Length: 108
Image (tube, rainbow, N blue to C red):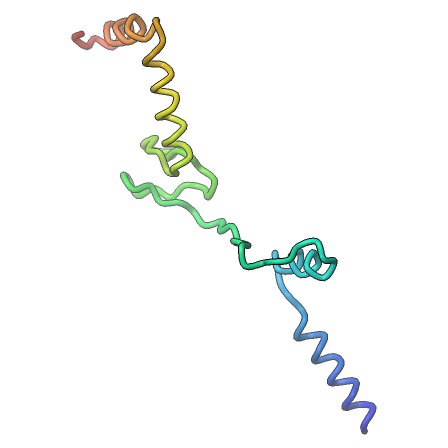
């Protein structure tokens, strides 16, 4: 009976060490001494992203809404802002903008 109790205790200890998903990799790296602090670990959520403008659900990694083209994350917004600043200092910017407005039938 004592051997059976020890066996159950061992199995319970092993079961308590069982982890799921991304925790497995962190546990292996921590046991190997590769990582020290796992408090900085942030689990990536794969949930759909709702567009603030049209409420369409987009994939988790979308930068723009599939329906209305609204920017969905800060990284894409910064990238657009930087691109616009670069374009505005270009010598061709005014000419391209006028041509675009003319092609769209807009007044200058």
